[in-house]
Image 1 (cartoon, rainbow, N blue to C red):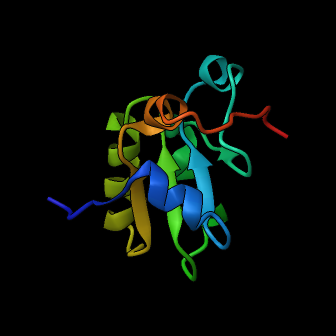
Image 2 (cartoon, helix red, strand yellow; image 1 turned 60 degrees about the horizontal axis):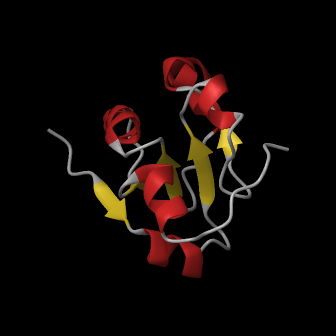
Image 3 (spheres, one colour; image 1 turned 120 degrees about the vertical axis):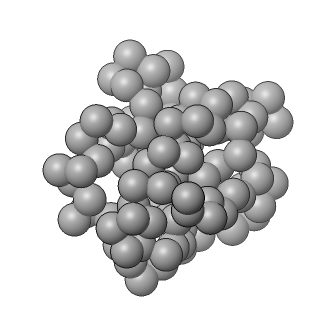
Length: 105
């Protein structure tokens, strides 16, 4: 089992600069809004697109509630990435905290 590091909403909001943010939700979920600056890599495509993820800066992965993003963090850790963080509570926690959502650019 991999030790998945978690980041909470407040920590992400205060340190977003320099963080690589990845949304692993489905197309339909992403259409409802994303955290500004996120790139969309659906969970099922992560093995094919893992080369797009930097190893030299913190990476925060999120989904709707935190379950799929924890799987993504475990997968990336197994590939040797040690800079992965799971957003605790996912985008639902972000929205509950009153943080803004934007459209995927």
